[in-house]
View 1 (tube, rainbow over the protein chains, first blue to last red):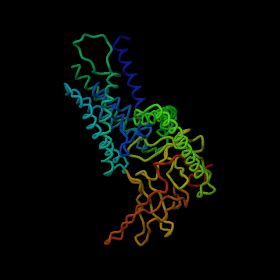
View 2 (view 1 turned 120 degrees about the vertical axis):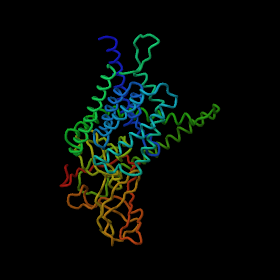
View 3 (view 1 turned 45 degrees about the vertical axis):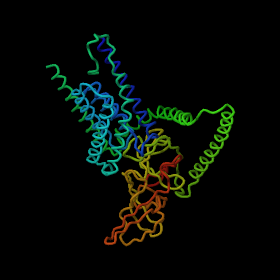
View 4 (view 1 turned 90 degrees about the vertical axis):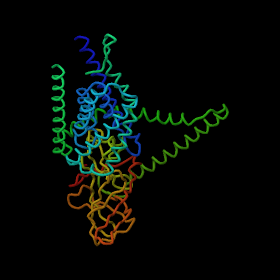
Length: 181
Length: 281
């Protein structure tokens, strides 16, 4: 296996560890750390980070894996979060291609918008597939608070994901890193 | 050309992932919580359960220590020693109070004044809901203890919900305050039947389908109806009427009830081994 292959495997292993950490945090820690009764969507934050740093391909695959893992612990239909987070991961990855330089607050702003879009899609799709209880004003409040909470966590999650995806190949200083797995 | 191919491959992957998600949603919706999807969920929950418990155990003392550390100031040695002693004494007192409270809860849970003759299994609450759009808790009993999907769950004061997901040593309870929960009830004084529905983001339940000529009083107890094919045995306490709004020009009345059990304070529960046609145990 050449250096490219090894680096790719290492990055995938690191992302898998992040995925396990995300599931543990979401199921064992954040249920006790709610703000106004709302927990953050740490998996969505990680999906946004992966998509922003590695592009739409990695973003959509990580979004699917994170959503599927979380769905296993929810009452809503299996596949609902994975569907929504796949779309969010792809969309953020596509948007990332158009961003040349980003300010320090950009990660939070992007995560907030992704949280709003992801939450809204979750409610809409959930209502379509028979989860009528999601349809209501309280869901608007929940989505809004969760998006704010996600935005607060983004500055903590982005560096971890950036570390996991960093390219350790010895390379000329003139080349930048970050695209692909 | 290469970039075009890469973009095309990404779109194919995206479509495959979305189609897979939709297939999973369909499978799960048709399976009704059981079947292949239910098995996958059960296995995953069992597999991760020890790690979840470990993380909770690890993070709980750290957060308690952190709050204690951040609130402490710079004090003199003697003052420190006295405060430490006071802290130890208070800690002992708090531990005693906590033990007495736990004892009371366990006694309440152990000696139910309702559901006589129905075998049950005691359980401890081990986790809260990980999602924002559902009202569930997890307990440390599963299929190996005889627990099955649909079984009613009570605490010392009344009904709290029913089993909605089960693994071998862990189960999920859908609380009666979950917005997707509906429970057939009966008003204890008027004997009128109705349905109590959970409400999103609220601890109150909305009581629907009340006959227009029924006069309901605030504070009136509501119990499970136990009608044919009901999900709960008859006569289990559910809640009390909290408010009644009757519009002057309308026959309809909007009734809200507050559950007898504070869903945020549940520590111990009993799963009734009752499956609708009789006890399972």
